[in-house]
Amino acid sequence: MSCDFLALAQPGVQKLSPYVPGKPVDELARELDLDPASIVKLASNENPLGPSPKALEAIRNELAELTRYPDGNGFELKRRLAERCGVTSAQVTLGNGSNDILDLVARAYLAPGLNAVFSEYAFAVYPIATQAVGAQGKVVPAKDWGHDLPAMLAAIDANTRVVFIANPNNPTGTWFGPAALEDFLARVPENVLVVLDEAYIEYAEGDDLPDGLRYLARYPNLLVSRTFSKAYGLAALRVGYGISTAQVADVLNRVRQPFNVNSLALAAACAALDDADYLVESRRINDAGMAQLEEGFRALGLSWIPSRGNFIAVDFGRDAAPINQAMLREGVILRPVAGYGMPNFLRVSIGLQAENARCLAALAKVLDRA
Ligand SMILES: *Cc1c(COP(=O)(O)O)cnc(C)c1O
Image (cartoon, rainbow, N blue to C red; front, top):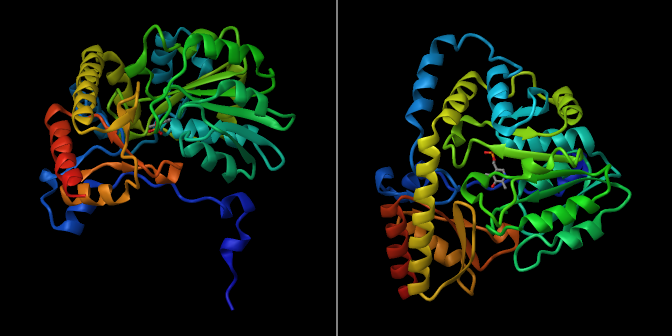
């Protein structure tokens, strides 16, 4: 009889379910024999604009160097990010996507017997990173779908080393303001690392949303993580970053894979940072698309969770799985969030005007039938 290698996996891993990504366009095209060009994918919070021309040019210029390892220290990108963020290069950690940063934190600071605190309906990677290293995830019930920061404070115990908070949060789109963050940071024990995940901050900045970087100088236990996957439109390249004290960055650097960010990603990210117009356009399209979808949902009698991300969670008031299936048959890929404990919702990423219109038309048809 062969060994049960599931039973041999460490207990935290045995209890994990794999991350479920949005359905790829080509997969649905194969399954339903559809033309991929006819499919609208609004399932992975991707930037609908297409990549920045400046990023594409930087990638082309880098191609001749593919035989070489990338700059393992990411010198140029770190320098630019440091300048942008008002910190030193020593405070910057580059990641293979910001998911990599979350993983580095877990590997450096969590272990069996220790725990990480995060919210109900929080990003699926927090439990994966936590349980992968044998630590316990302490899930704090959400309040109005968002983070209940006082309850998260109360959940911190002597074995807590990390708190993961996302602002805005995915998949709910909920956010908290500067006063709530300030109050939270002032009360978190100083030996607990607060990972403030700002994957959507470029869409969300404004008076009612804090810029995590502003708190770094006062709270040495804060790490802000950001990404090039969303507003910068480089999801496929996998590049994100963490900003923290130089000491925390040094610790993360010790467990980092030596060449975790590839050379095309490094070059494209540098170029993307310089493309201010692209970012403005990303945000404009997002604001317009959000308004378009909200208006369409209202007309369909649907409610939703107000969102400051590039996506919106729609409430169908009943099991959304059959609606999702019917939408797939219409060639529209949305994201089921039952795995997050939200079976009545689908998450819709904001697309281009025509994509949002396709989504709303398909929804009208599907809901009419169902
Ligand atoms: C999309 C997302 C990320 C970014 O992931 P990458 O690895 O940078 O592509 C991080 N956190 C949250 C909450 C997200 O939704």
